[in-house]
Every structure is written in C-alpha cells, then in structure tokens.
Length: 323
Image (cartoon, rainbow, N blue to C red; front, side):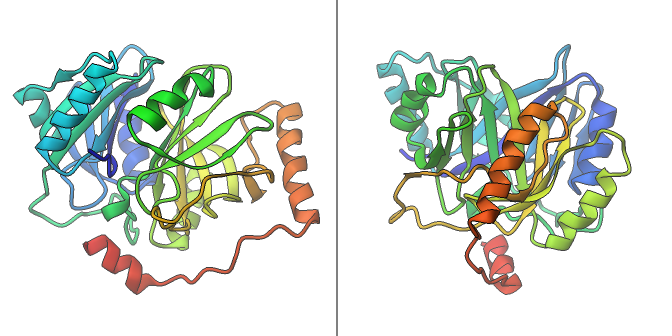
C-alpha cells in the first residue's frame, strides 16, 4: 500500500456563487457540475479535482488521496482497522459523486475527513480553462498540496507519517512548528502548521507558466481583501506564488516553479531560514507577527540565502502533463 498523490479536495461554503467566479475567473479552473448544493471544477483530464458543497459553515470538507489499485484500499483499510481507526467503505453513490471506482473513508485524530480512492474517472473532452492559462501541473504530482492548521503537530505525526506513510521532506521549529510531507516528486503534498488551532490553512495549485501566476495576481488585486500573501518565493520548495483568500475564508496558493525531488534519495532535514526568501507579506496578520516573518526574510537576504538556479523547460512540463 502506498498513497501516490493528492487526487481531489472538497470544501464547505456558504457562498457557492462566489466560489464559481473565484475558481474560474481567478484560478482558471473549468466548471463541471452546478446544482443548488454543489459546484465542481476540473484542472486537467480528470473529470473533477475540486468539489465545493453548500454548508452552514466554511472550511475543509475532505481530502482525497489516490492509490493505484483496489487491493491497496483493502490493505490500507486493514492496517487502519488494526490501529483502531474506524474505516467505512464508500458506497456506489458516493463513488459516483467523487467520480472514482471505489473509496474508503475515515478521519484523522483531529477530525479531518480523509478519503482514499482508486480509479479516477477520466474526461472524454479536453480541459477548457475558465480564463486563458497554459494549464496546471498535475499528472504524477497530483492536484497540488494541502496544509492544515493543527493544535499540536506532534500529536498528528504518528498518524500521517507512521500509519498513512507520508514521508517527511523537511521541517521548521520556529516561529511555529512546520512539517512538510511528500508522496512523489512534488516537494510536499501535505503539510501541518502547529498554530495552536484546528482549521484549513490552504490548498495549492501549480501553473505551467509564471505569467499565469502574474496575471492571476493582477486579477486578484482587483478585489479588495482578496490577496492574503503578496507575491513571494518559498525557501524550501522554491515556489514563486501568492495566496488568495477564498470565499470560504481559507487560502489558495497560486504558484509556479516548485522544485522536483527524488523520493528515493531524499533525506528529511530541519530548515532555519523561515518560509520565504522574499515577499509573501501576510496581509491578514497583525503587524507584530508580520514584522517577525519580515525580519526572517531580511536576515536571510543579508546572509545571501538564495535558491539554486533551475531550468524552466516547457517541453518537459508538457511531457509530464501528458503522462
């Protein structure tokens, strides 16, 4: 059994119409299904990647993680059951809603709903973005990544690392604990922030072109309060991105240019330079917290901390997208 990638994300929202314009007009996703209770969106050849459901509250609904075969679901279900985790099999109707062959459902120790599936439905027609973009970097890397705010990282580490098999990429211990986990060549498909509260922090989508991100940044700036983090570059995955506030209150990271790691040789390690080389000013935070993070960036800059030179290869990106 091995989880291979983030397959889909479900969110809860009190404003489905705002999500429709946000996901298509800013992110560039393609609308698929639209009902009084649900909106779903495509990013690639999969029938759906993002599902937004009407709810009295806002936040994470579920995370969908992919495995290769039905036997992998059987093995994971048995493993979870042996560890005392209650697992249920998704019925035919739920599998049809998720557009997959089969799935199991359970919750992590913090109550977050997790779905593990195999056999995603592939669309019969090409992806048509909601605004002109070159496309999303998915394929073997999955949909992107998800990040949770958690009360205590140490309480959840055994569940995600030891039981589900997420592999630690790197971690930081100050100013708060940050743990990043990989499943494939994407630097991280999952991360936890020990912020002292339980909530959905963000999900990330990666674009094939930096211009897609820059143009999205222009679109986001047309709405007051839509930008949560200014344009910047991360120290661990080297992604250039900005964060937009969603209609559900959490964020979406919209990025380009993240590093690709080799899981077979990667060694987990502690990081010390803070989350960003430059930018990523957290506009939603009070000034004392913003100042602390800003000073970490300025210190890294004063020490000449830089990302290594990488080669942007559109041909390779296109080949990965087709795989």
